[in-house]
Length: 123
Image 1 (cartoon, rainbow, N blue to C red):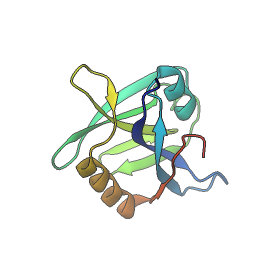
Image 2 (cartoon, rainbow, N blue to C red):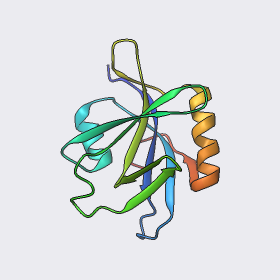
Image 3 (cartoon, one colour):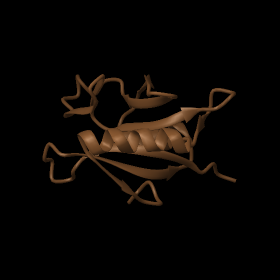
């Protein structure tokens, strides 16, 4: 049975405008799916401390050198290319974002970009 992990995918609007969109997705937790969502071959993990929790931001390690667009996720975090936000379980695996982390990410999204809800990673 596949994992069902609730995460947030941060991307640029498809028309290549500078508008950043964060949307809730469900993905299977595999590295292959992470590569596909982020559009990369090598992921970099960036822990991001929120008010009460830490989330895991996964980005393209070589995004800057691949001329991917710069995106502002928070005042403390800017990345090149897409970003996937999850949390870490007790054994180091990706797990769904907690309700409090989702609320905080939604608050950040209100300040910096727009968050939308979708059920599938490909939407």
